[in-house]
Image 1 (spheres, rainbow, N blue to C red):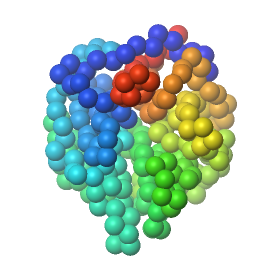
Image 2: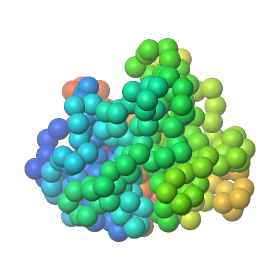
Image 3: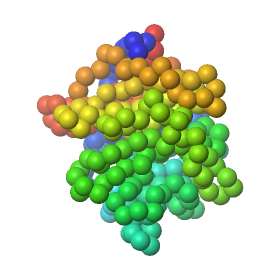
Image 4: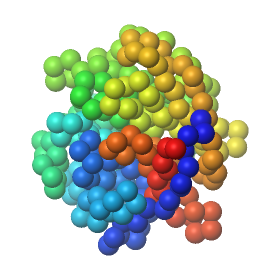
Length: 267
């Protein structure tokens, strides 16, 4: 896929740490992200323009001494994120949670019921909620090997039913051209759910690439899977701009080791 160009570094005024796993709110006003290290936390910043944000602060209502990341939000302000703070098999397998975003904090946080696999060593480690809030695109990760990277990771789909999610019985077929024996994660879905971007990590050499997949209807499988051209280095975590003409992503600086935020724009 060659439509992206004009890769630009993104600045968050007032913030100097690592920037990972970006997500832009559906109304385009707010960037959510996490930092790096064993104790990852979630933060937010206000949009100034495509390449500039103003740092607003951390999200203390969701941050813990464990890992928080993979922020996502629907158009109604339901805020989803991943945390390992309460993962405690066999009493609790949940790692994806949801709360209400009020513009400065997240309230009423509860598990996103129906997404977890009730088996020790399996964790959901990414979440992307559709704009209408009715469909979750998320990751099943097999961490039973005890490595920093999962032994296996695939994207899955679940549909909202009342206050919980039910895994889509067609998920495997819908994503049959997306998931492989390598690691697929960090899904980003367009508002109409016809375009999907995701990250693939190759276990053979621990390198990453972005891919794009499309479909003509939400009842169809994703096809036309294309590698996103024009990128290099260790990259992860695409996120749509409000108009879906640009994608944000984080990239590791090979000199400093820091994770930095970039945006690329479609021609």
